[in-house]
Image 1 (cartoon, rainbow, N blue to C red):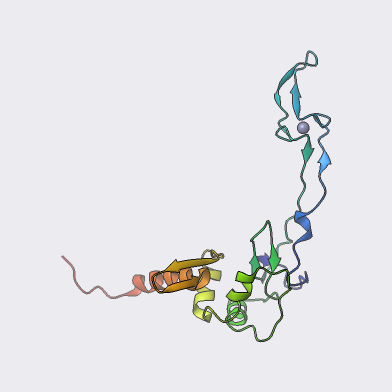
Image 2: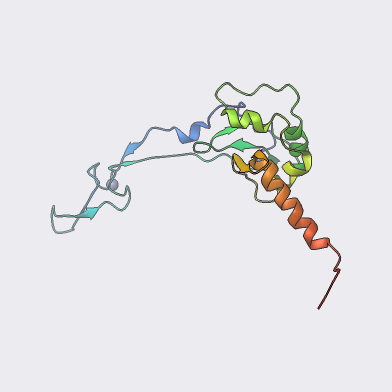
Length: 169
Ligand SMILES: [Zn+2]
């Protein structure tokens, strides 16, 4: 995620912006129904709340120049790294986070991700490429983290482009 460099949301805590209480839809007064202008005739679902009768609010993360890795297992998810000012610094930390303790609420596959499963090059390829990876990939050689698998694919694609032409019809 791109967040402000001084963003200081605690590691492992779910982003509060996903968990705001819903409010009643005032367009349909909470009924979820659409009404015709000539009276109280129901004509399908309220367009604002899609028939729910209530509106769910969420606040996105603030945006900035910093680089931070989040697990997005549920909604916005939670931060799994500090904020860094460059993608290289973030990749370096993720490849070897030292003895940083993630929250007990952090999903176990995320803890596995940050236990040196992927290299600096794999992390950097994912961060500067798609910016995200799946949790894991099952291959004939065993289970790889999404970062290992997608990082390698991205690195291979990059080097394909600079390979010299060896044969040409
Ligand atoms: Zn409504």
